[in-house]
Length: 367
Image 1 (spheres, rainbow, N blue to C red):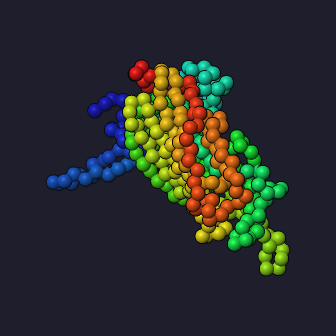
Image 2 (image 1 turned 45 degrees about the vertical axis):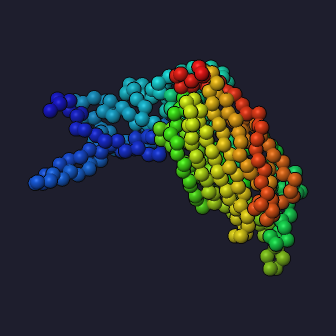
Image 3 (image 1 turned 90 degrees about the horizontal axis):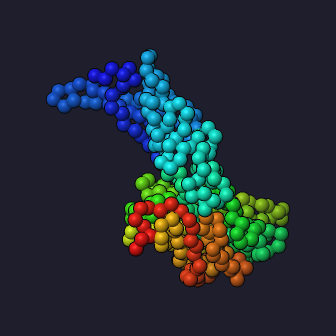
């Protein structure tokens, strides 16, 4: 048997949806003949803050044995399954080191200002919605539907007579989306982050999600992709039976779908499907869209992204790549109706797309 007092036998990790190790378990024999029975025993439990800072560690793996080593060396793989240095507390991501206590990288970005002026930001200061497995960069893809401030007066517009009352706009212009999954300034949004080093290697898969909570996140372990779907809060202004003005606020549920395809080396397609309804009228038609972002690597260190798909003719729609506006559609309808939400659609084609500097897989861009 090993002489190290810290040795507790073989361990098995349990992960959360973000790839963080949240528990370590081992199996102890309970005996039995002719079939031996084993019992799973929890050896450690870990809780993290949003930037990976340690909130709590419990279990025998979390406390050094007498005469043993530092607890970090007993299980150095915890947050993001990255190696944690016991003495400094830094996590090694392959290209640079990250400090959970500071919430930032301690090394400059290897691709310099090509990913923006902030050389030490950890996933743009949004660790709950973006990924960066190697410490390089992720590419952010966004598509949303919103009600422009030009419709109506003072942030309100009249609903059709069969709806009654007024509804609120999102009180903004094109290019002003806020990327807040818990309270987006849009009727419907889908956005995804893609690890540039996984382009062309992501597994083909299709996943659907539905929630009445107004937002949902879909993770694809091993593919370097995270997709988010959300709806904004809707406000309705009308009167009660006594003629008193009443404002009601609701948030519709969201249905989302993600399809990931890697049809050839150095190319990945991310298709985002989403729909929601007007929350005040149960039989109202949906807001729908289906868009595909195609990411290809024309040469080492560069990624080209193109957009295609369709959406309804109401409300307004826009698309972003790395938060830069690349597509906008201004609806000529003055409000929601059976035709512009349930019948007519607009195709997206011929968009200019965008090229960005990014780390790319070996062998790509040489064909």
